[in-house]
Structure formats: C-alpha cells, structure tokens
Length: 467
Image (tube, rainbow, N blue to C red; front, side, top):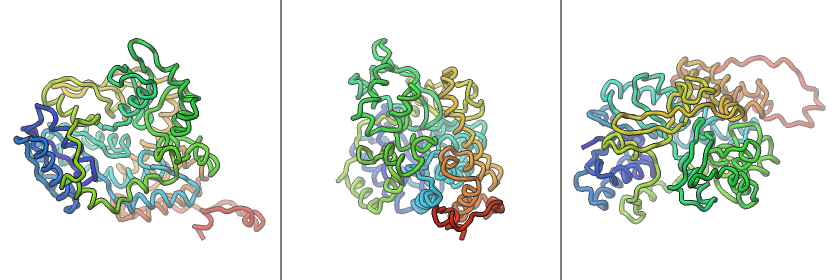
C-alpha cells in the first residue's frame, strides 16, 4: 500500500483531483492518502470528498486519513505532494492593490512581479520547514511541489535539502500543447514536441505531427484575429520571437515591460472580454475570492457536484505510478538546471522533459535555447535568485533589489518609488513574513525637488502615499 501525503489538502479542487487521479492506476488503487491542512474545517471537507471518491470508484483497498500535524502524516511516507497558500486572500489582495497605487498593474502576480516576490517571502520559510521534516522523517520519499512561485520555491527547497528527491510541477506545458493541437486540428496524443525554459515561460522548440514541422502553421495562426484577441500577449510573443510560449497571456503579460505600460496598453493587450485569463487587471483576486467555498465543497462531498473519476492530465499521479510500478512516462518537471539548458545559469530551476521510472526522475539535456529566448528567461532568473536569497539571508534589502530588477516593476517605477512600495508591502505582510523579524529596506532620502507647477500637472501615487 503506497502512501501519499497531500499537504495543503483543504484547497477547493486540488487534493480531490489528485486523489481521484492516483486511484485510477492499478498499482495505486490500494493507496493510503494522508491529507494535511492547518484549516480544520477545510480538512474535514477534503476528507469527506476523498472518502466519497474511494466509495464511488470502488477502491475497496484504499484508505484516507486526515491530519493537522504534518510530522504525524509524514511517518512511513513514499510520496509527498505540496500545494499551499500562506496568507490567504488578504495577502493576495494587498500584494495586488498596493503595487497598483504605484502604477504596477498585475493580472495574476504569483510567479514574478511584486506579488510573486511577496509569495516567496511568505511561502519559502514554510517549505523550508517541510523539507527539514521530510529529510528527518522520510528522506527517501519523492516530493512533488505544485506551489507558486514555482521556480523560486523549488530553488529554495533544493537549497534547503540538497539530497531531497524533488520536482516542481505545473500543467502549462501539456495544457499549452493541447491548445495548439486543437487549433491545428490534430490529435494531441499524436503530437511530438520539445519544450524548455523556466516555469510559466518555457518555449516549444519543436512541434510535429507525423514528421511534419507545425511551427510554420502555428506562426500563421498567431496572426488570425480570432485567436490573437483571446490570447494577445502569447500571440505577440510568437509573432515577434517565433516560438510558442507555454503560459496564458495573463501570466505572460506581466513578466516583461511590453504589455502593461499604462491603461492604453493594458486595454490593447489585456482585454478580458475574450478570455478571463487574457490579462485583465487583478484577475487573481476574482480567482481566489470564493465566499462560496463551503457550499462548493459540501456539494462535492455529497456528490451533488461529482468529482470526475477519469484521470486528468496532471503529472502528479503519472509520476507516482511510474515510480511505484516502473511503467515509464515522460513529464515536464522543474528541476535544478545543472547544464540541461547550458545558456541559463547552472544553479537555476528549469522546466525540461524528464523520464520517470523505477530508477527515479531523470531530466533531459535539451541543449541551448535560441539566444533571444534565453535572454528573456535570464532576466527573470535573476529576480528569482534575489527573492530566494532574501529569504535565506533574512535580508529586507534583498527584497527591494528583487523588486527593482523585476521587469514590470522597473518599467513602471523609479527606484525611490520601488523602495517605498517594498516597505509598504512588507509592513502590510508583517504577520505572514515573521522570517524578516519586522525588518524593512532602509528609507533612503530623496535627492530632488519638484516645483508647484509640476505637481499641479502630475499625479504621483508614491508622493501621495508618502505624504
């Protein structure tokens, strides 16, 4: 009976989806699923849903347990799956709204940008503690991290436990490939592709069907108005850089200085009328603001809203099955680079194809990215590095430096403004970042003045906030 611990099991759909997926495999149908969450009410719902999945699927040999103490749950564990949110909706709201006062317009803000950096500050210290528990209690367990900001957190976890068996997972690679297969009207299972880069900004370097190179057709489709309008930033990347990027336009629009310069460019490139994931302001707040979560989980537990028992495309269950049964599979995982992409830093976390079987998870050496794509990734990697170092060194000044190097933030603000915003964000998040011990970046003096006529004609949110 393999044992899988799911940390963060109180999420609305995540643990139920993973539980249903895992049990579809013959080698895993007698699994012990141990659910962990600090919210007892959500945990109780998650346990009821998991028990209903076991009952409805006829998995008579499976069992589920619920735990608020993760160390208890980790005893004799084979697999650990992590998806946590530290700070909840209140933290998300402030990390979107405070930067907006300074002209930084985020859509999702969970990977880079001020929102992603603050998530790293809140979440990495907790994940470091989880890594230490795993290395003490079940060091041979395989760990699958689904938590964003994926690259920052996986990087920090690997540093915290150099011997940990860890991979970071996302669904953007297989999801993006299925989108293009549908647009090209070819069966997704017949497409052969190679994708590489960093999480949320990896690129399809090869995309073929029956030996035909489909990239020329993909480049043509990017210019069709009916496709461009619902996926604008991604199509702009493709139009100008020549390769499809994995993540949605909402994500892509905020990782660079090109699409969210002002209200006009946001309206042009981030129109939400065609798709909610197309980059409209503060989409993440609408995604996470779920006052109906109790009713939603109750309906799932009572099977009024049944959980699909068919296996999804998520990689988590595929990895667990391949490790347990030896049946090989290929997934796209976030792992330490170590030369897999030689023109990205060797110590960063990259997203590359990985073979999984009883021998473990083996990343593929993809080779160098086209230089212009590597340049896009490198800018973001250095923001990730600074954010991880900020947590590791408990250094508020490193937080400011990460913010200053972020492409969207640097495009929107001066250094004085970024410093003031960083201080305000850290003050607002003080209860969720105890690792910083209340420390803030230094408040540096202004070295310029403005005359009254200039002030009358210009609105400076930083000045208004400072006053």
